[in-house]
Amino acid sequence: MKINTYSVDGKSNVQAFDIDYGLYETTFQVKVTGLQTVENKYVNNFFQVKTFAPAQHHLENTLSAITASLSLGTIPNSIIKGVKNFRALPGRTSFRNISSVETALNPSMQNKSSFVKKNYQTNHQIINLIEEINPGINVTAIKKSVAMIKDYENPALVLGGNYGVTCEEIDEESLLEYLGQIGNDLYIILTGELGKSLWDKTDGKSIYRSQIDQAINQAIKEGFNNILIVYRSNFSDLSKR
Image 1 (cartoon, one colour):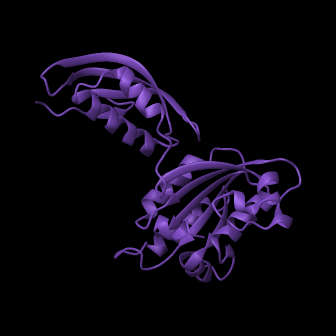
Image 2 (cartoon, rainbow, N blue to C red):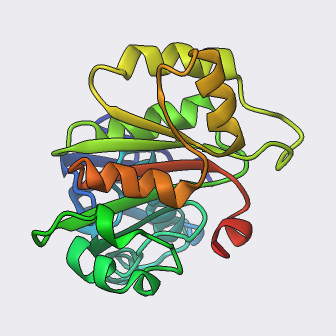
Image 3 (tube, rainbow, N blue to C red):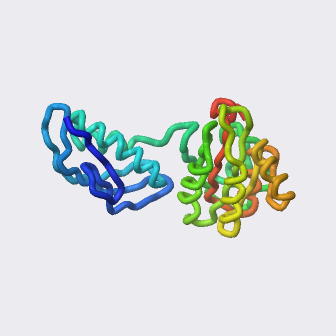
C-alpha cells in the first residue's frame, strides 16, 4: 500500500480548498484523488466538510483524520458527520462564548472563574474565548494561534503560564521579540509566572495581571470580545481556578 498524502491548497491525495475559516466553524471542500485504501481500492471524490478548525494547523489535523479514515475505507458521509460533531479538546484548542451581562450577574456561571462584576460593560456583549492551555506551548505555536485571532474584530491576547510544567521552558527572548512585532496590532495582557518574567524584561511597559481571570477581565473591560488565551499549564490545574 502506498503512502496517502494530504495538504491545504497543494497537490496531494486529499486536498482542502475553498476554505472559509470561522472561530466556531470552518467550511471547506475536499478533493480526493487516487487515494489507496487498505483493501487496495482507489478513491476519487469531492465533498464538503464543516468542523471546528479556526486556523490552518487545526485544518491540517482534520485533513489527517480524514485521510486516515478514507484509507481505512470509511465512507465520506460518515466522515462528514463525524468531524461536524467535533468541538475541540479541553486543554488544547477550545472555544466558548460568554455573555458579559450574564457573567457579571453570576460569576460562577463560567467555569468557576471569579470575574468581578463592576468591571463588565453594562451593554449585552458576547465574548468569544479561544483557549490554548497546554504545558508544551512554544513560540511557534503562539505565532500560529495569534495568526488565527488577529484578523477578527476586537482581538486581544492573554499570555502567560507557569514554570516547571515541562522539562523544556519556553524561549522567552524569542517570545519577547515576537511580542514586540505584534504589539501595535494586538492588545496583549501578560499573566502568571511566565507573564511576570516577560513583564519584568520590558521594564513594566506591558500590561500585567497576576491571575488569569484578572487578565481576561481586563480585556473584557477594555471592550475586546475575541480573546485568545495562551497559557502554559496543565489543563487539570487551571480548570480548578
